[in-house]
Length: 305
Image (cartoon, rainbow, N blue to C red; front, side, top):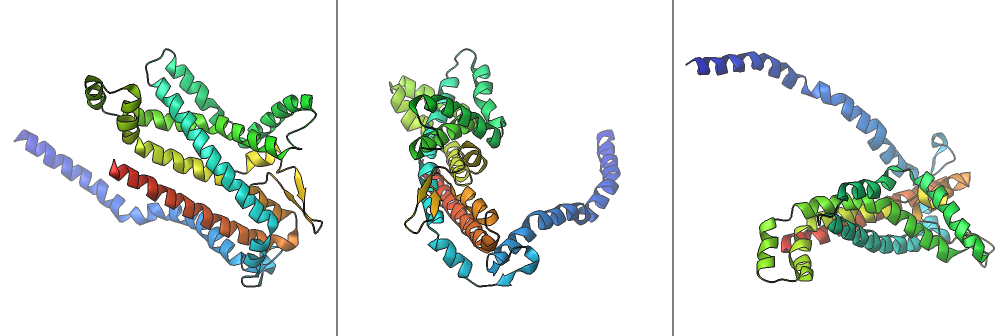
């Protein structure tokens, strides 16, 4: 009886506290919604509107319809940046995820100092992209100068350098996600495979990898979207150089990725800011579509497994 009275008294005492919170719930959420609208939703909608306008500042926008999109799609530098970005994204997707999974698999085998290695591999992810870009630019130039070239003068070395920079920065982060997935693999499945005489490779491919498919989904999504959104590393490493001159006298940056191309289109020529805004909208649609397709494909693999 005493316990029931105590419970009823507790319910009575907490009831007046809960009801005001429930009544004022909308008021508590209002600042979040206002911040979301002002900081994200309104600029996004206004940016889409500006992509249909010719402007130098947002106050003198003049409606031009689809002209900006037509100019963007005819821009040779934009199409080159799209192809180069796709190449970098696919290559880095393979390299980063294979190496991150290999490191995570090795560190979950019970080797000595695994916690130290996790911290060391994760540390580059804490360094800003601009800082990393300038550091690696000096490292590459210090090596390439012996061969009479520079990362600013070679498309091949610019591509390789960007892949090394991205892998060095992102492998540690993906490794943490893969470690969490590997540690969640049921021990009884691994023990059953060991008893049945399965080899290490067969255990890895038939049990471990299917069990960590959720981690693979997350890592491939993050790697793919991060590669397409890459900007500061590309800017600091070589600023999209060297140049490729076109027959009409214009030039394009041979190692320029999409984000950097949009930035240059918007800020290098005030009369082409509408074109830069149209490129940004196309860029958003592209990244969103690729991300959704990748998520749908890898999630199907999770269901099948």
